Length: 382
Image 1 (cartoon, rainbow, N blue to C red):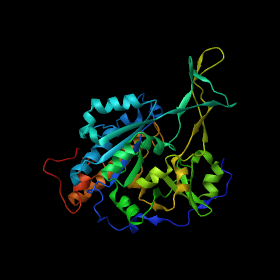
Image 2: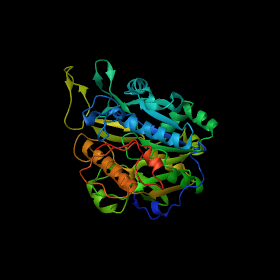
Image 3: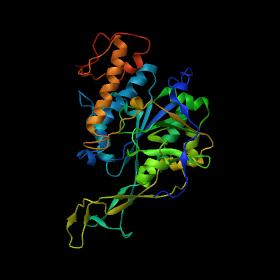
Image 4: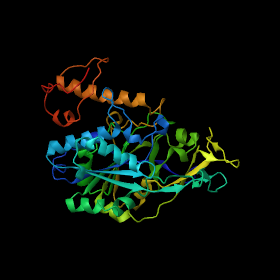
């Protein structure tokens, strides 16, 4: 549990205070997107990479397809082959790349999509020892996202993007299909203020929800994982803290400068399949192992200029974590539906019935500004 003193963040920017982008960074190919996609869909009862999970309301498009269609729509809008990098893991790298090849990169040119892989770290039992997860195989798990920039640079992708003139990287988790991957408004704000790190936050809806908290430690921005806080700390000491959405904007120079930094290792309790002393498989219902991981937000301490922007939650955040309950298939589909109904209402100049099922083509989010009515081909479904 957290023992160092922290307090709610005293200073941050509200999204509505940001001026519209006029610099044309997207059309200049100054923005790249990095998606964290190293997880499997086990909590969704899905035996494939989480990014392969079908989530859209009507057409059941996967998380990967929704992301790629947004990249394609943005690319067509500015007539530039925008760039996407995807972090995989030892668990899902082969399946992820095979999924893209099988689906012809969802309309993108293969030169726009770059994969790089993070290795696993050993798991420890409650006594601090290694253990077997299958015959002859030591149990391992993903090592967290703290080393993402190390592997991003070592893979050669950073150098390719630097050569292309990319200056800003928007980072997002694959399990949040609500977000605009390029987010030119916030990327431009980041650029104007010469930030090294811009953190997208939202107000918390529940003191007990499973989100990290953005707070303050001395004069620095601090993100604390919910797993490192007691229920009392979540509800009392940090009742005003903002929610960490896992959405960040980084300068390319900052990424390069921190790619070799050593980060603290955090421990998280997990229920992990293991082989017992009789050689039998056990799948416990309570945590039996420590997962060791590093977190990307520990890199914020190395930034000379960071800023937090509090964004409208309904437009930016709908995490897909669980089969049912909070952050579940149902809640994410409801969030997608609400956002599409809102845009459809704006485009037709009238209200949309609550029982109207709609799934908009991502290109409409780029074409909708300053117009009413729908395209002749009817890019929605009832």
